[in-house]
Every structure is written in structure tokens, then in C-alpha cells.
Image 1 (spheres, chains in turn red, cyan):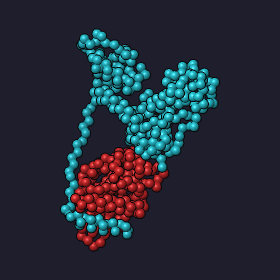
Image 2 (cartoon, chains in turn green, brown):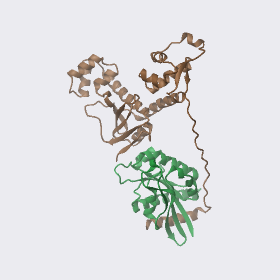
Image 3 (cartoon, one colour):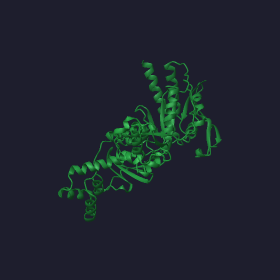
Image 4 (cartoon, one colour):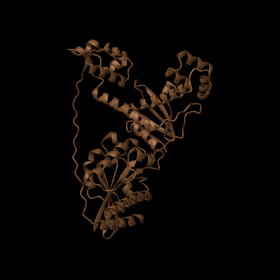
Amino acid sequence: MQAVKMVITGPFSAGKTAFIGSVSEIDVVSTERTISNAAERVKDKTTVAMDFGRITVDDDLVLYLFGTPGQRRFDFMWEILSEGMLGFVVLVDSTKPETFREAKRILETFQSYASTPYVVAANKQDHEDAWPPDDLRIILRLDPSVKVLPCVSLQKESVKNVLLELLYSILEQLDKEGSK
Amino acid sequence: MALKGNLSDFTTTQLLNLINLARKTGTLSVQGQDQNTEDVTADISFREGKLIYAELGAQGGSLTQILHRAGKLTEDQARLIHERLQGKTDKQLGHRLIQSKLVTQNDIIQSIRQHVLDVVYGLFTWADGSFKFDTGRLPEASRITIPIDLEMVIMEGSRRLKESEQLQEELPDLDASLRFVDRPDARLRNVNLTVDEWKIVSYVNPKNTIRQIAKANKLDDFQVRRTVYGMMQAGIVELILPKKPEVEEPKKTTRRGRRPEQTVAERKSVVNRLIDRIRSL
């Protein structure tokens, strides 16, 4: 059985656990804890090590989705989670511009780990205050080749679209490698 | 969808760049504190990515006020015009002023342009303040708008910001105080001081912080830094720094991630199977 993995990363409270939960065939295995830091008490619990979801492809192949811990003090886990990943999704809460700088930092950190393809998912697009993906691209100074996708992590179809776009990007990169 | 946020998360350069690249039309309202730490709102309007108008709080953006601030109208002229031509739009007022040869068309254009740029350049120094971009909202039709390319504004604003930052590096702490140098050299014999320098000289005392001196002389942070820095370079004054505890930044190391060795064809096969599976979910 071959196992491949994708990493879902992004700032604290970006919606990573929900994202994985929307497509995982198992209940997301979360290592959640009650938040102790008052400044980060946006929600009651946060992921302290990782979220873990699974999509079985066939008897020989399984895809694991790993969600990184959102709080900065657990970022030692990022590199461990990124090892051998097929690609990664940077999930951004489009309604929280104060987290965009952190999203950029996370993106750059993951890029430094491996040159795997990635997409940026502009989450919570169903909210009135959400920044449009095109504006996010500009503010995060993303190259035109990077896909910035609208996303609602609670909606399965939306999450599927993000994962498919990431897979298409991975395929394009493999095509380039193959043609060299 | 609304663009909302805080200048502590985005620089003015980033916001203007966004508006320019996205060719946005609307008004950016920023609520913050000016250099005198007073609450103020700046409204900056754009049409298809070009800067067209700006107003800063109670400063007033009427043509009469702008021309007065630009020195094109005296205080008495501005007051009289305000009294006699109340109710006229800026465009009508502009025509009347040109006809009566009080100002030229170029005076009006240049004064409005300078007013708009002053507001926007001022915004570059705001480190904090909530902002909101209202798509489609434009200034009142009575206002005279002048399209200005944002590229130039961003470049000049960034240059000014850089100068301000360099001065901030040289003089990071406005809670430092000043004293006259113990052994002034020959350079002091023929020194000529500007008005701002004289104002500061009169307050030089180890008991007065630079911030207090600035406040007493109604100088903003940038002005006081520039003037004090000039006086330091001239060997007139030197800094007395307040003591602060040192904070050490944590260091981080990174390692390169490992990737499983597979042929491209094998990896493509895996990806295609994943695509099929996710489509079928």
C-alpha cells in the first residue's frame, strides 16, 4: 500500500480542520486542546500537533491529509509534516486581513522546505467581509502562476475543487520534469 | 466584497499597489491618528486605479481651503469668497476665480494636486489605523478631481518613507534627550541655524526628551528627527539615550525536506488516480 500526503497549512483559525473534515472518509483525527492563550481565544480549541484525514483511492493507494497546527508556538511540527508531501494548500481566512502577513510567512516557510507545488485557498468566501481572491493575490505578492482559489472549507465541493487544482498543478510540474 | 483591515497589517504602499493593479474605483477611508496623535479620517478616492481626490479630516477639501493652504489666496480672500460664494460648487467657484483673475487654471490644478499628494504622502507615515475600501464611492460631484498615476505616488511615498525610516534608525528613540557637546569644534563658529533648529536649541537640556521638544515646538516626528539629526551631524548636540533591557530574538534552523524517489511516470500515475478519486467523492 502506497501512502501519499498533502499538507493543509495556514494561520491560526483559518479553517484547516474543517477543510480536511469536509473530504476525509474518516472522522478527522485531531489533536486539539483547549486554548490557554487569551489573545488567541477566537475559538475554544485549536490543533496543537496536527489534524489527520484520509481518502482511500484503491487497494494500493491512500491519500493522507495533514493539517498543521495553527498557533506559532507549535511550528516546529511544520517541517516534520512537510517531509515527503506531494503538495500543500495554504488556507487563508479571507475575512481576517490581520492574518495575511502570517499566511505569507507560512507560505515562504513551506516553500523553503520543498519545491513542491502549492495553491492558496481564500477561505470563508461565503462571508460578506471576505477579501476577493484576486486582491489576496496582490496583497500576498503571489506570482501569477500561483493559483489563488475561492474556498468555503465547510463545503465539500469547494474543498474538492481546491484539492483538484493542486493535483493539476502537481501534474503540470511532473510534465515539465518529464520533458526535460 | 469589502476590503477592510488595519494599517498595522498592510503598508500604505501595499494598499495603493493593490488599488493600482486591480484598477479599482472607489474610496479608501482610513481612520487613524495623525502626527499630533489626534483621531482623524483620510478619504482617498480612485477611478480605475488612478488617484483622483483626497480629504483629511477637518482640514477641509473645499477649493477655497486648498487654495488658501497653497498660498494662492490670502486669509481675507478665502474668508470673503467663502462668505459670498457659499453654495457654489468647486467647479463653479474655480471658473469665477479664474474669470476674476485671482488665480489661474494652472494654480487650481497644481494646488489640488499638491493637496491630494500631501494627504496621501502623510498616510505613508501612519503605522496604525483601520481602513475600508468602498467600491464605487466617489467624491461629491461638486469637487474637482485630478487623475494622478499611482505608480509615481507609490515610488515617491516609498522614498519618503525610506528617508523617514533611515532617520528613525539614526534616532530610534524620541525619549532620548539632548545635550550640547562638551568640546564643540571649529565648525560651530560659522554655523547658521534654521528656524526649526533655533527652536530646538532653546529646549536642549538633558531633562527634556526629543519627544517633549517636538511637542513644545509643534513639530512632527519626522521634522524633529530630521532637524536633530542635522544638528548632531553638525556637531552641535549629542544624544543621551535612556537605558533599556536587551531582548534576544530566538534563532531558528531549517532543514530541507526529503522526497521519495520515484520516476516521473510513476508519480504521474499516482496523481491521476488521486484526481479520479477526488472527482468521485
